[in-house]
Length: 328
Length: 155
Image (tube, rainbow over the protein chains, first blue to last red):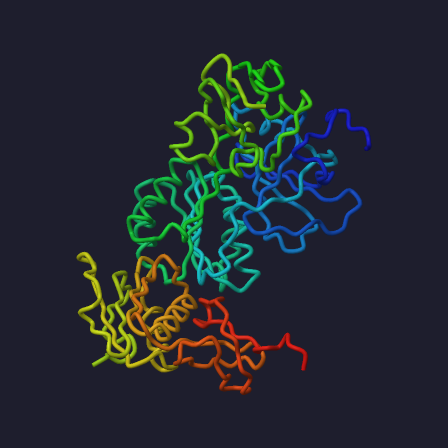
């Protein structure tokens, strides 16, 4: 391992991944930068499914960002990062990256793939949610399928607007930009009742925005298998309050500080917890809870399972009580 | 009685399309709960009737639902055509008549044979191989998988 002074150890989430070099940094808007990375020795990077994300290490933390390319035989990976002042610090670290910096990344992961049976794709993005949606649009253009895009952004503050416009043609057959809520409501309502049979809908943006779009679609008879949303567009989780975990079987007590996940704490203590996305999506790192009320912050457990308080996702969830007891 | 391809369907239809085959009575189809409804009737699932169904479906919009009633072979063939148009399983309701022939797909010559007898074997209409009818059913083909019977016995 080559010495990287800024990154003392490889985070478990990017282990077995790639070490890339920043080849370009460009400002999209006042608060969004695009970062392009390539293999230091050049050459092709692993292909990825449209809508995939890249887990990037910053200091001792990791964050997932959507890749904006089509994913077909890429020689570089591009992500766009919105600066979030009150986040854990990942977006600020990304904004400090310069050309020539080395970063550890995991191999791209797909959690927002286009449906192979779709006859048309209706893409809906708000703000920084454009990133995976742009990937879908590029893929539609390259793969001879068709897409319609609705993009909601602040006036004069839309990232990747020029690239989206350039894609217009036989693949991206329509691009509707909305800069106010009212016009978006009308555009969406019209789009939802005029899509050919076989269309799938993909939405990425703030959680409230996605929920509203999905609810309206269901109201217009869209079955849930046609609806796809990308949870990674959600704001980064806050650092949370410190708490204690008591491992009942091994009789160990561990302190989980603010800004460090339960999963990381357990790993540091030598516990091996199966895990994959580390974002509360995949459900791999589920742990049995014997006592205490977890603060559920995952997107995996159902409302009922969360209320039962006997399982939790150790990657993102924390505790409402000062101490949790786990069956470990 | 059936209208010409897509003629009777208003553009952008998002209601319920009810298709019956053979002797199935339209009135056997369930109430569509106040949703706009469009009825079609065909004698059987022929290339022509399936093409008309596809034409109707391609004129409709997301939100549409499909109900298929009749002999299993016909509604399975229609369901496969609907899936080809992009309809999802949860958007299609199958109302099969209790009994009826079934399709058996021969992977040796790629022909589909109608099995009227409801036995465990059927003679392939394409290559005359005696096929054992497996439980495996392909929704895409609307047919059961057949395979050369007694193939494992030493010749």
